[in-house]
Image 1: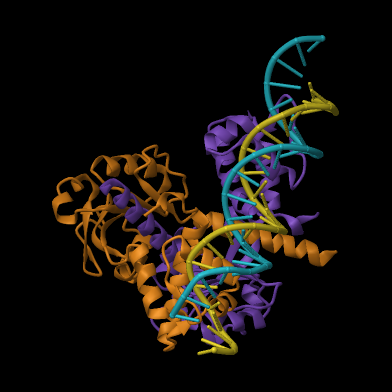
Image 2: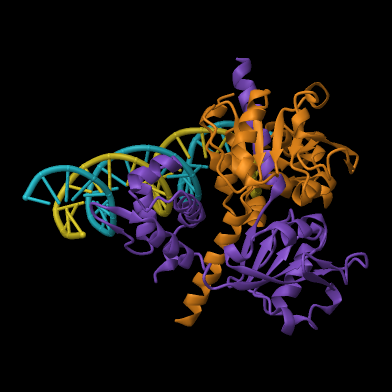
Length: 215
Length: 215
DNA sequence: TAGATTGTTAATCGATTAACAATC
DNA sequence: TAGATTGTTAATCGATTAACAATC
C-alpha cells in the first residue's frame, strides 16, 4: 500500500468518517452516497471520494457505499482490528478518567498497566487495572508488553519519560502533557492532545467574535 | 482588525508559538529571530513571519522579536487578558481532572461553577468549586455568569445540553464529548477535543509503520 | 434499460515557501 | 556604517473542488 504519500489532512478525517458511519448503522441505515454523507458532515462529496480513493475502491456506481462494509474497511485502515497494548504513565485525575471511562477496546487498544511515582496510588487497582511504580517499568515489561504509552504525568518529566519508554521498545506515544516531545526517531509515532492549545483557540474566536459585534 | 479572513491553520499555530515563547522566557532568553524560532519549532521562518503579519508588526529589522513583547501580543490576540467565565457540565472523572488540574486562569478563563445530574456529586465541593444540579442551571446563572460551557458529560445528551446552554446565553463551548455538536448559530464558537479521533489517528500511523517495516 | 453514483483526471483555490527591498 | 532580519510580494506547492467517462 502506498500509504506514505497520504496527507495528514486525509488521515485526520478518517476517524470522523468512522463516527458518522457508526451512527448511521445504529440508525439501521444500510447504504449512503458520498453526496448524502457529505451533506450530513458538512463537506463536499468530492472530498469524501478523494479521501477514500487513497485506500481502495469501497463504493459502487449507481449505488453508493454499503455502510457496514465501509465501516469495516475504515476500521481496518485505522488498525482497530489489530489491538495494541498500551500502558498509562501517570495515574492522576486524567489518567484515572481515561482508565475508567475511555473505550480503548473500541479504538484498537488494550490497557495493560498503569505506572506512577506516588506512593498514594502505586499498588492500587483502578477499574481493574493495577498501578505499578515507575521504577518497576522494566520488571513489568513482560507482563504489560506495551506497544504504546499514554503520557498523563506532569509535563516537566515528559521528555525524560518518553526517552525511557522508547528505550524499552515502545513505538508510539499518546501525549496529554502540554509539551512538544523532542523525539528524533522517525519510527516513533506521537499524537498529542493539547488541552490548552484547544482552549486558547476557543479564546481567540470568542475575542474575534466580540470585536466583530462591537463594530 | 480584519480577523475574519485569517485561516484556521494560522490560529491553530498561535498557541504553539505562545508555548515556545513562554519556554524561552523561562530560560531568560530576551530576543529571537524568526529563523531561530523556526529551527526550534521545526517550521520555516517564512511561516512564522507570515502568521504574525496577520496581526501586526511585532518584530524589528536586524534584531528579530522581543520575546516578552511578542508573548504579550499573542496573549492579547488569544484573549488571555480578557478572562471569560466558564461552567463545566459533568463532574465525572474528566470534569474533576479539569477542575483540579487545568490552569484555566493562565488560558484566559475562570471556572465559576460545575453542574451534574448525579446525586452523588451534586452539593460537593471539588477543589473549591461547588457542584450544582443541572436542574438549577437557571437559578445559578447570576452567580456563575458563564461565557462558555465545558461539556464533559456523556455524549448522548451533549446536543440537548448544548441547545439548552445556548438558550441561556452562552457563546462558546469546549466540547469533550465524542460527538459533533449540531449547532447552526454562527455566533456560537465550538472547540472540540476528540480523544478517540486522536487515538485512532495514532493507530493508523502505527499500522502504517508496521506495514512499511514488513516490506 | 435509464438513472444514479462512483473513481479519477483536470481546474481551482488556498497555504506554504522563497525572494528581496526596506530598515533597524 | 555594515550586517542582520523584518514585513511583504511573488512563486511554488499541495489540497480541495469540479467535471466526466465508466459502470452498476
